[in-house]
Length: 361
Ligand code: GDD
Ligand code: MG
Image 1 (tube, rainbow, N blue to C red):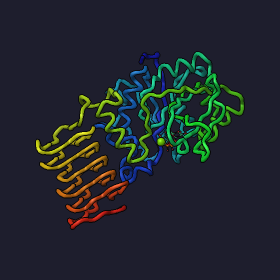
Image 2: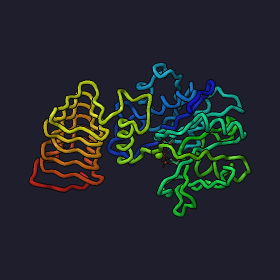
Image 3: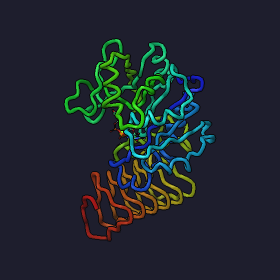
Image 4: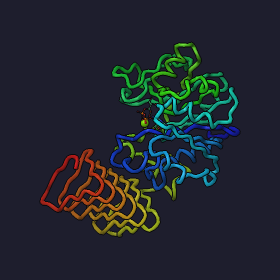
């Protein structure tokens, strides 16, 4: 069960470039992309707060100045938020070390560290309790995936002790991976070299293991998703709308779709599968929107499935969009059939045609 721990501090890693989510991340950093109606991070902030986190330091780099105008001092979330920006990206370890300058925790206190692109249903309170009970240096949340080669592969011994950390190895020895939520004892953060590019995955964790420090795994099989690709991003949004992962930040009841204020959905349109329809968007009669994220001020008359539609985009009647990303202000004319990872860059207009199957445009 979720329970709170007093005055816990956290660092949120939000400095990555989100290259795999282009063109969505050309103008907006990944952690701010609208997800189930709110900026992605709102879900992480609300969840962290539900476990007793009260003070969070954002470790920013890419588009750093965009975070504070959205979240401010955090009071609307019941949090105290602080922002630490790297002049040049310092990697995950360097970012943690840099952000730690804004922590108030004592050397023996646990500090929560969160990758800024993860949706997780695990019990953070229980992870922290195990860390404290066993006096670990670091405790890593671990989950299991089908393809561990895209993640940090983390074997453990029967006591839960991490025996190796193999970042993006072509030959993973287990399906158990680093799920991107750590508890660090504060003094261990202070041991990371300051002002240098450091990767926790490639340097800090392997170094601690080599030195014999207790690095612990907290393995669990609850909901977990890294939203770093378009397909995963759409899945995360629809799972939140459908209620597969409960989020205190969802701006409405869970269900087949979430319509934001000013959205107009024709009674003759089909909108389902955890779709979000953005502010002022119009879904016309005959349109179909399934499992998708439709931005603000869009007009959809065609068929959209498992896709992200940027703000002010138009999907005309007779157009088919599936597993695709449509940039802000783009127009997909009738007859275009866009599938399987197609990305349409912002402002591009695909004119009406007989039938056209397209790759990147
Ligand atoms: N401030 C700052 N500075 N943040 C950074 C930097 C940096 O230089 N580099 C990356 N980040 C942030 C990203 O914004 C993201 O929130 C987090 O660190 C992880 O970076 P990703 O680029 O998303 O890494 P990944 O998904 O390939 O791999 C990481 O996450 C996996 C789980 O999803 C690793 O931690 C893997 O070991 C792990 O399995
Ligand atoms: Mg990631």
